[in-house]
Length: 178
Image 1: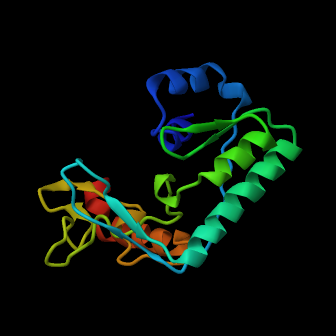
Image 2: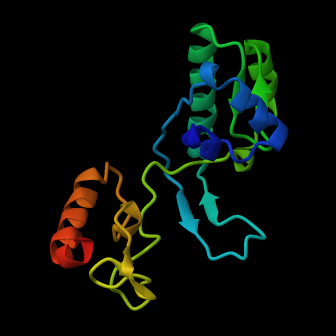
């Protein structure tokens, strides 16, 4: 349940409450594409986007085709309503809705999720917020043990790197965790 609400945070409260009432009938489906463009995180006072995308023309085609194919599969499988992560949440109820939607599609209105967000809490560098043992610089008894500590973004699953890092930090700080 929490993942559904985190993944649909762009929706209005009314739409989120409707999701909550129908939680037994929901599913989240992901379409993953490898783009040529770049995404970067910027510091923000929350007045604008934190993640910025610079897409290549070929990326836009890939994204549109991916949305189209996923919607076709879901409607073909019996879905009666799709909520797309676009603008304030676009609701499609048919393939005709999809056709109309795609004619006015603007990539910059999509809400994208990176599959492997990393390096938001770097360890032990000059700008790091974590000490080399994984503890917060401001509080030695709070440890960060997830993908945010991995030093660079990868195009493959970071699971092994995360598990190794967690094992290292726990072994190094066994007294602190006992």
